[in-house]
Amino acid sequence: MNIRDLEYLVALAEHRHFRKAAEACFVSQPTLSGQIRKLEDELGVSLLERTSRRVLFTDAGLRLVDQAQKVLLEVKILTELASQQGESMSGPLHIGFIPTVGPYLLPLIIPALKDAFPQLELFLHEAQTQQLVQKLEEGQLDCIMLAAVKETEHFIELPLYDEPMVLAVPETHIWAHESQIELDKLRGETLMMLGDGHCLRDQAMGFCFAAGAQEDGRFKATSLETLRNMVAAGSGITLLPKLATPKDQSSRDGVCYVNVVEPTPSRLITLAYRPGSPLRSRYEKIAQLVQRETVNVSPIIDAE
Image (cartoon, rainbow, N blue to C red; front, side, top):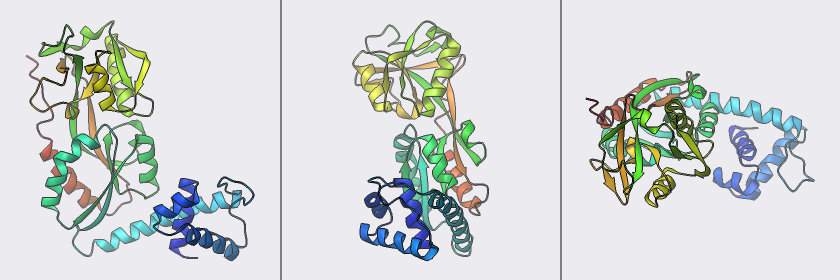
């Protein structure tokens, strides 16, 4: 048994598909399948149910997968410790982003990261909060950038920036030419929201419900861009994070953006990493860079 065998096993447990697991491990399907069978022969126990068309693990297989994940995480920590002997800002770094942050934050920070840390090899991963948290716990990601939520409280979180939410309305809407409105003006309004699984959905709904607004139950968007297009089509209004709105423009492509005040709905974006990671200084340097590049994100509103 070696570390690579454990990686194959964990990949198979994650993807539940031999071809996809093999692709994730950059090997052929016969290679991965053969190594799993050799592992079974070595241990003298069946890890998979061979009669099923699906990838089903036996009880022994599930227990081994759980232990393998722990072993691989410890190996990753050992590797990180060893990397501290050289240049701390060099080598691979796997960063996860939620879909409502990544596409809008990355254009701001990637050029700065490459310029400041040219020896850092970045691998970027996008997924919803639940998947990112799981991948960080299992060692598949080094750190994640997302909105602070209860699920991330057991990690170490470095604050990056406070991001206001802006009201997006069609250009024909009564508020289209307003520079700002008070939050309680949303009382009685119906807003379109993202679908389940997006943390922004829960955060935006919290502000809307507090103001007396409600969700449009007829429609749940899969992305912020879908929400934006629905607003442009005149289907409703919504709240969008500031970075997802045009810079220095109050309207574009049929959508007008109105600041919301008293209070301003917002979310805290953080960089989270495992408490046991030895690369604390690396994450702190990255967080400081992101803070500098997003310094104009908040505050965006003159509340006078």
